[in-house]
Image (cartoon, rainbow, N blue to C red):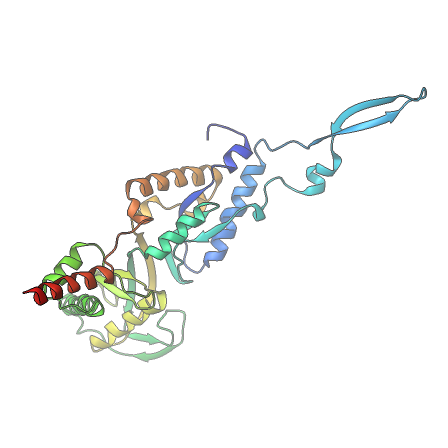
Length: 320
């Protein structure tokens, strides 16, 4: 920071903040911790001095002395610190679940508008999800009651990779079915070249890619590229993978390593949730948005484009 004026710095705190959310901590607690740290750091800088007021004192010869003094009603001990939590607006672009760690995008002050646009664009997120074979739990997470046990000696890397390829293929086929086009048609090709195919609603999870990253039985880690997902869906997916492998499994860790163009390498760790790092992070993320304007203004593969192309084909057929 090139200035110690807290007011000037406060006016620059507008944009997208990329922080690394720890597992077991809610998004609300993360936002409260960040805003609290920012307020503390701002109040340590050069804050606004108390406003002045005129003091009139009558003298013995019926004249008045006028003095300019600091207004006691504007003193910090009366009105509180100059920068307070209520002065900030903070909203998540895409929220993470309680058990999920990783990339969390937050909109700060006027950046909440960009956070809303990112949320409406529904960027693809990349996860590293770790499962454990041999035990099934009630909620499919490790902190729940065990409800089943099974052997897993027959599980191999080849079996898991083959199953994941099948899951990815079925989800890719589903994406085109939701658009009402044949996956082997030219319309499907044109639709795929226009960008990421998104469902019309945000209620339907879609997996764009799923691969095996590591297998060290009983633990295995898969990388998932998904849209409209929630941590409960990812944990259920690990459970279903275990069943398809003729065993059982539960989820032990969910980590988001990328959200759109924002990666975990640029995320602020918990020890860096302070004002200097926040200012630098907002500036870096502003540059990312400038380099990739589709984050805010997405030209995605919409069903309207498909319908218009179908109408064009029908009109050609009618003309012929």
